[in-house]
Amino acid sequence: MRHQAFAVLTASLILGYAVGESIEAKTIYKGVTIPGGGVCQPSIPSSAAGIAQRANGFRNEGTTSVFAICGFPLPEGVNSFTIYFWSLDGTDRSFNCTATDGLPIYGQQYSVKTISTSGGQGYQQWDDSDFNGNAGDKMHGYHSITCNLPSQMSVIYFDASYNDEVGR
Image (tube, rainbow, N blue to C red):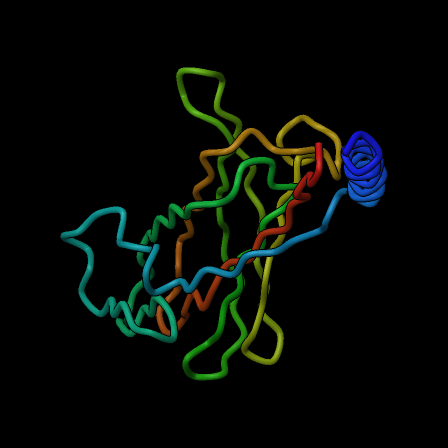
């Protein structure tokens, strides 16, 4: 009986050691994509003439520019995020967007960039270097983008990249 108990204990220790050694900490690069139609809205609702929130994007189908604000949920520790645009009529346009990182009560940072579409499409990316940090570093969180969206322009989607720390 003692030999059997010792054999079971030894086998358990060896198995536990083998399983414990096969699990190692690592960083996995991940991404998330969010459709524009679900997260954008006119920043001034009374100026919403021509705005359409559709499955294929937040569309300004009107004849004048509209300020659109897009707040989107992102995982903690995002390294960068990108907004993508599409021209409804194929015409190239140039316009500004302001992204935020952080909360106003904790020193929110702003970054203004110009988007210039080519072939009716365009995008713009922000990372921590746009908010007084270093490219590749984790951002603070609580992100939003406000754009002076020209007529016949659509916000199609956002994407973000982040590192998931596993096994730590």
